[in-house]
Image 1 (cartoon, rainbow, N blue to C red):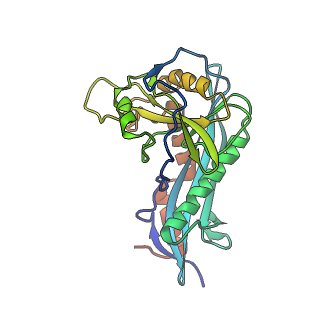
Image 2: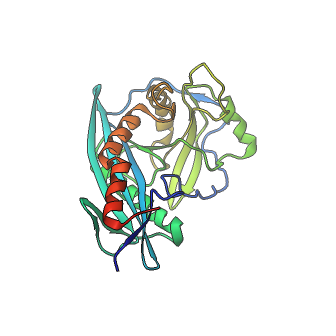
Image 3: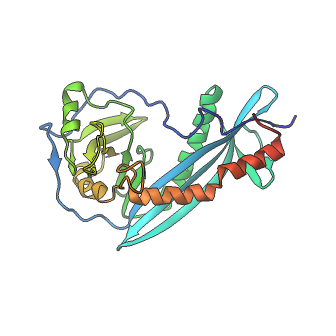
Length: 293
């Protein structure tokens, strides 16, 4: 029995965060609990930024079975001596729930496992495919400082930072949260411990520069940064105060400013270009797999 197209760009299956786990008991790594400022420490070179994208393209059925067709992409940007270089771009089309490759004209969707039941399990499988591609890109980068867009999910020999732009989980007890609103641009909170999926991490919040005009919510311009606890986390925490504010984007050029850093914004645009235009992909899927509603 052939696979049949049910829906293009399935509603509710677009790129987004996984359901985050609740954090464990709060454990500060620095005291007193007050804003900290750092110096202008030079960045290690090369400075790498790794990011990935995922896109749910279609929901298909074979009798009672469902599969999610999607595209994942990942790559890196290297900053060295004032030069910017894009590295290791990878793009894959995957069919989460397929047992063998599915062809739709020039498009080939490789099988990928589901990670759970129903539509959530399909989306989790697509997310896992994107994370695996990001790991492959990161494994090809040596020396220097590696910065990943999102939580730390891997370990490496050299220094590593992950940064989180949206705050779905409350990591601080209520009596410590007041410091988040009080942070000025270029300041950070003290570091605290985070335990996630077998990883022991140090984490802290950094306030990015904000344009003077307009109203904004109290947590605007906040990044949560994390790094393996086994590394020089205090040194990296101070270094982050010069790194992230200097690379923050401006709302004139990026609606997700300032959290969407300049190197990552450019990388995302290139990844999106290589993934192909959604409307072109949709027409090919409709042509080869049948009409969609």
